[in-house]
Image 1 (cartoon, helix red, strand yellow):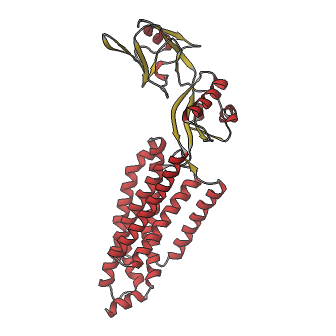
Image 2 (cartoon, rainbow, N blue to C red; image 1 turned 90 degrees about the vertical axis):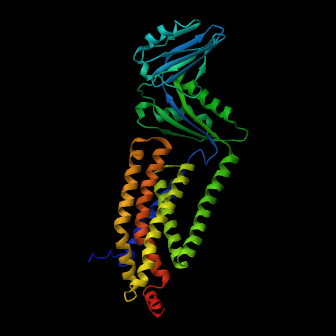
Image 3 (cartoon, one colour; image 1 turned 180 degrees about the vertical axis):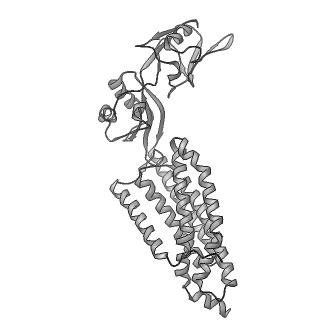
Length: 395
């Protein structure tokens, strides 16, 4: 006969372990001055900017409408006129250097292309905020990604006149990509804030930068999103409480709610400890973990309820431990399978998808732990411990 997992026997050890994790998470939250909130929850401007030199300067002196865009190392020019639309594609394989690109672009009537500074590999061309760009007599720059030595301190110094600006390095520092976050002041608009950041970068680096991404959230929208997210989590908790109350008993419902609250707090502590960005994607991860953990808990509770009638002569402690042991293989297989499915996103993805996957993996681990140790332990306490089976015997 398989030996039962000593869930109730080690309940104080499990509780101590959880308390330590909670203290570490909440302590890091206090020491860091709160969460690293994303632009979703903190009104302001968020931009991802890459310091990159200009390789080509394009102008147009014709009468047609011409747009230029960059896609995976290819320069694409679309010319619109009375005769229709003509598309010219200059790939990095056919035109490997900026000098080759400049010569090819000159074959389009009215387009003037100047090689700036030195030649770069065409595959290093960058597309940014504002592309596709319309060519005109004003210069349109094509920037190229190269390794550089601009430090994060230089970026902070360049933006110092804007007040409280948060700057983070994205990826390896040699890639020269920086995340800029700037809070709003009275009267600020997206255009005014974007122009202020661009002006400071121009003063510091000339035209040698590209805005890869720009997002703006106003104060009213961010407040609405915060309230909506909190309401979604609270409503989910209340509905879960009533659902388990109806399906089982109030002791099962309260135990499940305590375990879910435990999971959410530990996940938030994990996010605070590693300074992960808190955004609407984080709320999606929290709700996903609530659903996953609840499913695992219900499977175990259902087994406990069934075994309570089949094992009337056994103490409630043995019933719980036997039920958890019966469900353990299924729980482990489900958790490992889910983690393996999400793991590639945590390793190879970037941005919010990567953070979602990391949060999900941690949440699955914590949810599996709480379903097998925390929820059954609280059920044992709330139900009255050993007296539960005595009541069942009398029935």
